[in-house]
Amino acid sequence: MATTSLGDDELWSSTNLYRQLEFLESLISTTTEASRRTLIDTFFFRASAMLPAGHRMVLNMEHDIPVTTTSTSPSSVSTLSGTIDYTALVASQDDANMFMRFPIFKILKSHIPSSFFVTEAKVLDLSAHVPQAIAEMYACGKHLQKKILRGALTNGHDWIFLLLKFNNDDDGASYSQSDVIQMYVTRSRNDPPVVRHPEPDMIAAILLHWIRNSFVDLRSDDWFEAAPVGPVHM
Picture 1 (cartoon, rainbow, N blue to C red):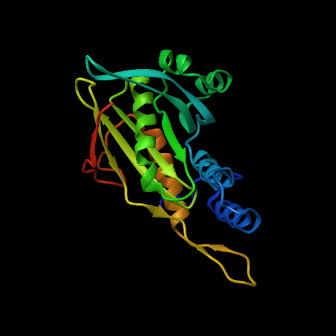
Picture 2 (cartoon, rainbow, N blue to C red):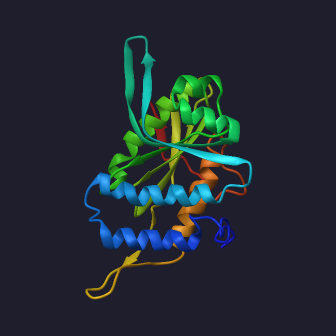
Picture 3 (cartoon, helix red, strand yellow):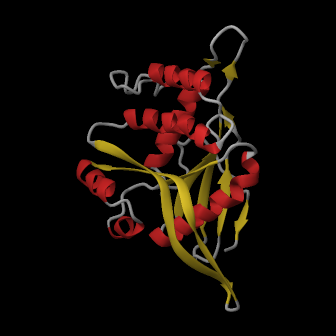
């Protein structure tokens, strides 16, 4: 409720968030990952409209992960690489312009912003893809030399928010995950689909807060209290 009025005079107001989601639900068959991304895009656009003055979001799709080599013992070495579906960061106007021109990890590492948020997009059972999302967050955190990294896993309708905490010696990590937060759509044969309130506003609000605080551990003003789900050994 506290964030619904933010960006009221912007294109991506709360009202237009629902209009766009309902438009997409009536236009696109969301049976593939590519089609689901139209829904995900909408939440990022809404989150960007809620930023305070002087800040900009930079959203990057298909962000390549630098090759990251990790080891759990002298004889056990593994390599992480791949592509992240979405990365988002919030920066000043000048830094945002730079990241728009050069959205690569080399620039990020040398001129790191205050946030770097990782999102993996899937179609069906999200829980089965948590390990992949955590591995990608792990690779990003190692490369950026950060102790905390926040991220999300989503299919556009359902969202799981993730928190990765590196061990003090950087040898492994632990992670926590939220319950699934779901966007509900009411459908009938003769009427257009209706997206129910308030879940989309809630998702957009959490998304913005987590992007802006992606290197920070959970605090009293967060939406969650974390209990580690399990260790991460890479």
